[in-house]
Length: 315
Image (cartoon, rainbow, N blue to C red; front, side, top):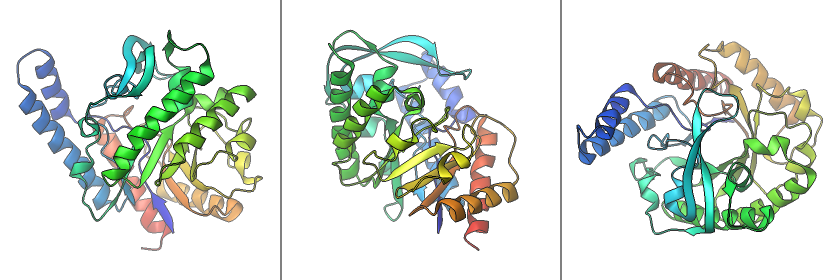
């Protein structure tokens, strides 16, 4: 059985963009913004259900970038200057670590809308992995990089437990920076995931924007349920020669290109992955966030995933 899910933030629809701009300019109130955010989130959840996606995400439509909400959800972090997000035409605010990182009292429901999910469906939460979080932060508080990763992992684990209690069955940790990690940094990252793996939900390390061939040996030793690989940055031969006991998530839909891939092409690729690697469970989805695309294009990518799922599962 092939399963399908989204792997990152979804773009905001135009009505939500318009209300957000009006709110920023003081022309509308917080209630109007919340109403539109809820409506947009419900529409995205329904889009996923209609297309038969196996794990639902809320799209994190209130997230300005991967890190900014954590400056509220955690003590010891504040949002810094805008910096380009890898080689994309988007930006994030660099997290400034100014004190000991730990979970704050801000309710998890402010940034994760799992209250809108149907209880009959599995849902997934997405957050930064501790290594990428530390690597892309400005550290002014910790004497060592390892200590920062350790406290971030503990805080992310606390947040994960709250999400699990709210019904979340799968936690995805985004780790694009792992693709360029040194051998020593990979050991530090692995220790962080040893802390995260103590939770009862499935855990996934999602890599993207980079070649995993130089780290695949170490990555296969991470204590996670699932490993996500960007197939637009990696050839299948990168991973097919390894013994793969983990679940595998293949980024086979390009989240940075408006071109809609032919479904036959993805079906052929995923069949090859299944036959050559034989993972315990095979997921397919975008290689990264779809937020880099216009909303109508992102919708078409979700429709494509639904089409591919039906073809692969003989429905």
